[in-house]
Length: 124
Image 1 (cartoon, rainbow, N blue to C red):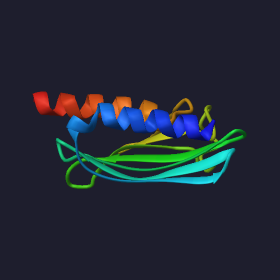
Image 2: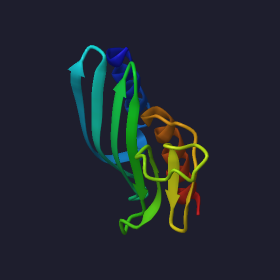
Image 3: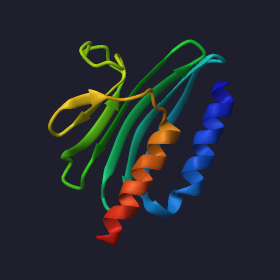
Image 4: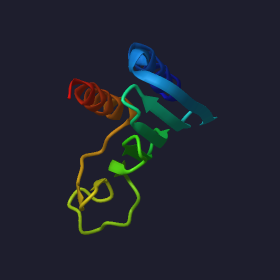
């Protein structure tokens, strides 16, 4: 499972490499049932995605922090269990103004969202 997921992530990164200007990614296999992806991507619009995703057969933990070129928060998806008031606890989304509900996400889904945002910012 972990090997398959890491392979899917690598294929996704290859498919969007035209919009990534800099990347630093580590794929760590903890075991056959657990792995961690950490790193940072800088996109063509200079936006930044800093991330950590722990993937296992039993759990998922993550932090995907998306920032503008000045390193100001655009949004951050995370699973830290510190916003019990959110209906989707522990999964939530930080914006500049508040914390809101968020379904569970993964790195591939976040890459889709961030790629779309980076492309949109180029059209402005």
